[in-house]
Structure formats: C-alpha cells, structure tokens
Image (cartoon, rainbow, N blue to C red; front, side):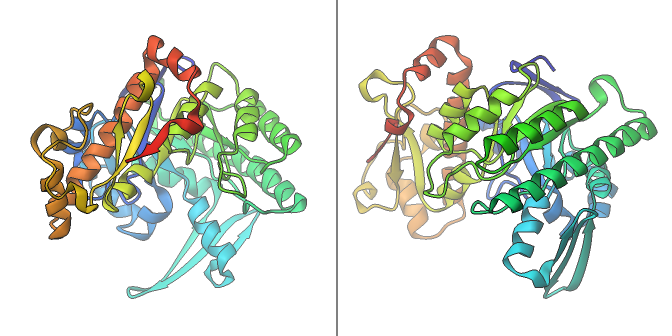
Length: 379
C-alpha cells in the first residue's frame, strides 16, 4: 500500500481512485464476473450482514471463500454489516437491540426465525471466513437527524468496537499465519455526524489504534439531500495522508469528483447498477469541452424507439459497441433479461471511465476546475 496511489491486496493491486460496485449478496445484479472485467471494474463490495443471513458464512467458506464462490479473482471489500442491522433495528425495535457488546438481530421470514449476534470480534471472524481483501470495522452509524447525545454515543461505541476489531484482527492474522501482501487490510470508520468536534475526537482515537486506511462513516448527504461537502472535506483532512481514504456510500459522479478533490480514493455505491435497472443511463457529452460533463439518458422515452445511435458515442462498452438505443428500448419494452444486463454494463463502464479520467494527471487537473454541481445536464 502506498499512500493514495495504490491499494495492494492479496488479489491484486488497484490504482486509486477506484470505484467498487456493490455486490451485496455476492452478486452485482444482472451481470457476471466476465461482464465486470470487460467494464474495467477492479473490485467489489460484499455485505457481511446479508451473506450471514443467506446463504450463510459456513456455506461460503466451504466453497473456498467469497472469491471462489462468485468467480471473482480481483479484490473484494467486505462491509461490516452493522449499518444494515442497525438501520432495521432503529426503524423497528422488534428486530433486536444495540449495546456496547454488539448487535443482537432477529429476522423472521418465510424460512423462519433467524438470530444474529454481531460483536466486533464476530464481525472480524466472519470477514476472515469470507476471505475479503479489505475489511471494515464494526461501527455505530447514527441516524442523520441524531441529536448531540446520540452522536456522542455513536462515537464512543465506534471507538470501543474499533479497538476490539483491531485486537481480533491481529489474533486472526497470527492464527492464520497471514503477513505481507497475503494479509487483508483493516479500515476504521470515522463517525461524528455533522459535528466537527465529534469527528475530530473519533479520528484521533482511531488513528491512535492504527489502521491500514480510514473511511468516512455516516450519511454523506445533508438533511436536504445534498452532498455534505464541508464535513466530508473536514473528515478527509483528519485522515493520515499516507493511508487510503474511503468515502463510504458516495457514488454520484459529481460526488465522486468532489470527494476525489478532497483526497478520497475509494468509492462504492448502488447508484449506477440500480439506475441501470430503472432505465437511467449515464453518457459523457463533453459539454463545453469538459471531459467530466455528462447527461442522463432515459432509454424508455419514446424518442429512442427508432434511434439507431449507440447509447453513447464516447463509450466503448459492449452495449454501445454492438447495439442501438432502439434495440435497448425494445428489450426493456418486452422486459427481456438482456436489457438490465446491457444497461448495467454501460453504467459500470461509465464509472470505470470516470476513474480513468481522475487518475490521468491532465484530466484530473481539469476536474479541479469543474463545477461539480453543473456536471449534469439531462437529455
């Protein structure tokens, strides 16, 4: 690992910045590993909570780990799963409880009642069993409208859990005899809501524990739904510059560009894949000579029914290389499974191209002059 430039893992070296699509349940919906490689995707994010629920960590481990299970040979980040469990518990207390000891979660579905006790130690053990390359500490993510007391509790618990995660991480490294480039990486997550004082306190404590990298925890949007740029930038400045900085959950193109300028190098989000399934495609348009200017193309619009052009002339993905807007419109009209696959491939290639542009010094310099709020125009 070398500062912001590269992320060195047991499954390969990734140049930063990088975007990892969400493969929450060990799949990026509608596409396979070969599709992802053709898009230029370098890594994926899986979710500990969802994989524990189904198919079960024991099954994934018995298949040789999550890489072999899903046929993916590049790096994988495993999210701790705490955010999902906590969100459900805070929405409805019948799902369980949250305490300093960890998360006790109960889920009832058609398969019956399932209980999950997610402690900091258990969280790390599960991520080792998955075989992830980059692991995330269990953290306490408060609601976006949390009051000062709730934020303070979140920070205190996050620090406490981070220390326990680090201790278990070191135990697992020793027992599994993992070192050098074979060892996974462990990231701590900085919380504190919109409070700079709380963020500073959390960052100082996590840095004293020591992690391979640090992430922005909590909601990256403010209460009005806009990018929380001030607190994101402040938190990035708190992180050591010789460690990768991870903007968890930041995924809009303009959000990625702005956070890259702040120093973040790792991004993940469901946005491009979810938008693809809902027929919203991303297209670079070079508006005013700006290489980062892009548009949304709504492929279901009737104006695309007879359009022989590719989705984007600036894209080299298989969808744009071989098919027209007219054909993709037709596939969505008849609800054929190829439609979301091609759309997902296109959107992921857009994001891979965005990372390539940000890595290019000449184009990255152009990004510094880009008004991120004006990057988007709609077709």
